[in-house]
Length: 100
Image (cartoon, rainbow, N blue to C red):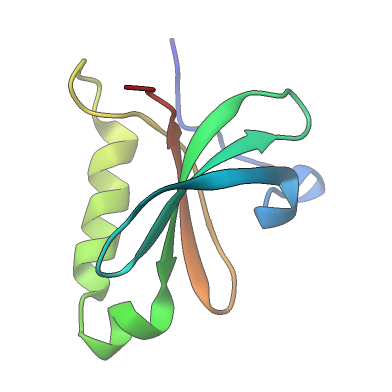
């Protein structure tokens, strides 16, 4: 069963853990990229949200709710969240890549 992975401090994951291939889509708060995890060569859809846009439009609760819902949902029509992390300027949601 796939579960949200909790990473220990030694195994810290971040943008440097992935190779970006190309942009899959763009929205009001950020972009979605096809990425490959360096350690296991698995493909993910990486949603990158800019903090300045989220905070500027007072949508912090929206971003937190999206992360929480995706992490607990287990439904065939909802993409599964594998990782979530942040930097000083961006939020990252790593989702199962579902081509097509």
